Image (cartoon, rainbow, N blue to C red; front, top):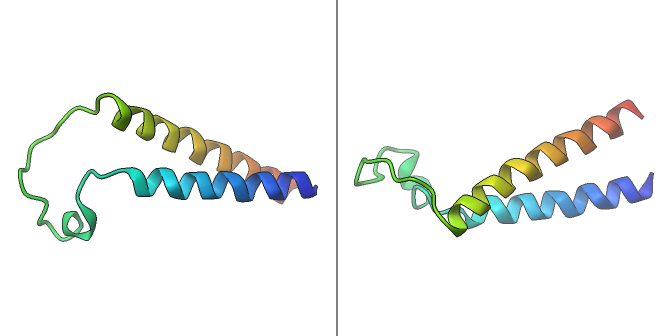
Length: 71
């Protein structure tokens, strides 16, 4: 059981890092409508890998959390 908790902490740190590495809207300005440009750009290269890893880490984090709740 301790291994699962340690794994959850590691995954959560990696998930936080992946979210912070994304630079889509330039901070809080995108939340309030000041994102500038206003056009959609396709994700390519490293940005796409970070995006996919964020999704994968969130699914893994959810699965571990669900396992901890059930067990």
